[in-house]
Length: 469
Image (cartoon, rainbow, N blue to C red; front, side, top):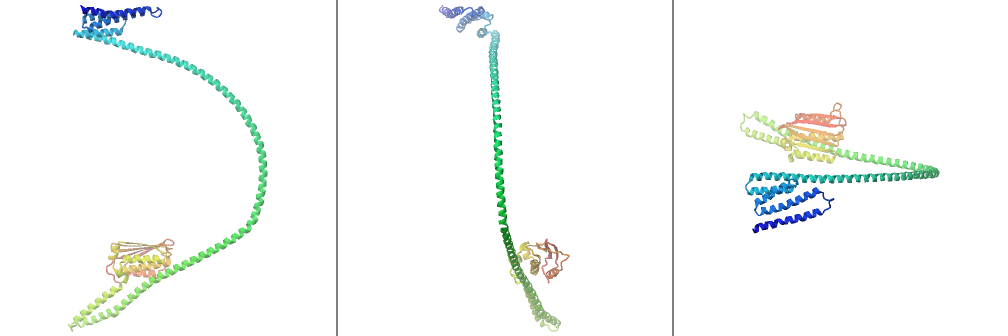
């Protein structure tokens, strides 16, 4: 009993508020709210009130009473097109159907709920679109107004520009008039200034002419004195140059003569040594061999002389060895061949104007694999070639290359002197001596020389272990 009284009391509150709302709506002037709108608003208030009563019954678990009210107000909400209230009613009826385990009805009510929801969303979107369209139309109208205002401003600006251009044209005309007048005045001044300058130029020309004539009159004797002084200096310079050249030629001649004397002395010493050896061979070894020959003829008669003959043969052998050893110059016995030639070339450079470039390969084989007598002959050949170069070629550079390849000694001798024609040259003492020595050594040579191009002498000598000269 008390529960039913509480429900009735709770249901009265919406009606009280609804009645108050009806009074307020009725109080509006008729011009402000149309009858249809008043009718719809009253229906909405009534449905809202009854919906509140049904919600309280639903909360109190009186689902049958709540369902009856929901269905009643749904019939009123559909004609009034109250979509939000319809959606809420369908949702509550779905919940009641679920509590009753009537899933089929719940599914149907849920479908109706989503249909209403979609309609509500569509209306909301339509409202937004309508709002945006209205706003766009408003902006377009404002833009058109602004465009009209801008056009008016542009027209006013054009008129103002025309006024400014007109004023500028007037000012330009005045400026041109003033400029023309100023130029006329300037031309008059320039003409006067030009006349003054021409007078000044003519005066300066007269002054320069007089000054130039005076300068020429003064300069002629000075130039004559300078020419005489220059000729005297030139003559003195040529004289000094000639004296210097003569002095250098004398020094060069002295150095060449000294070098030639040294070379000749070396060759003459070797010749004297050979004559001495020949004399020794004739006097000592020749006598011994003659005595041995006689004793061999008597050997069959006296056997006791055999020992004496043996000793004589031994003495003769020792004498031959001694003479052969003495045949080699002392400097070859005390030094290696390559350092000896290198030292000799340095002495040539110091005593003459020649720049000597010496190349020897392989040095060890040339030092050790060539017989001492052959080394001596090669040294003498180099001396004779250098003597001829210093004496006749006028060279400043000398390239010498000595190679030992496959038991053949290759000697290339090249200078940058004046050269000569091989067809016209007459063999002198040096060339004749070279031929004689190479013939004794079974060697060959070729000469390549042209006028003003230098000379190249290529010599090939077989490397024999035992040389017989």
